[in-house]
Length: 88
Image (cartoon, rainbow, N blue to C red; front, side):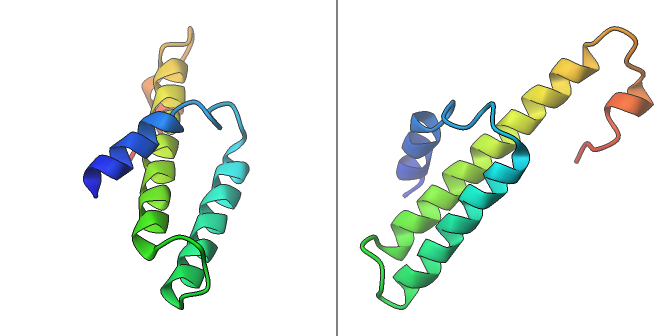
């Protein structure tokens, strides 16, 4: 199953990269809704497939956020406190 997640992560690596984060949340929420439908047998895909989709979205979203954070940390005039305040 982890292989499926990694394949999906690669497949979708750049799909939404330039979209605002609110859209990432919308896409993630849609997949969670599909997972709920799969769990009650009312969706064309299995719950495992939907969970893999959710995991791939989350991994890509985290990567996008890390890349954006790294880019802003390297910007001229960026102090450590002002550019890294939302780090995990």
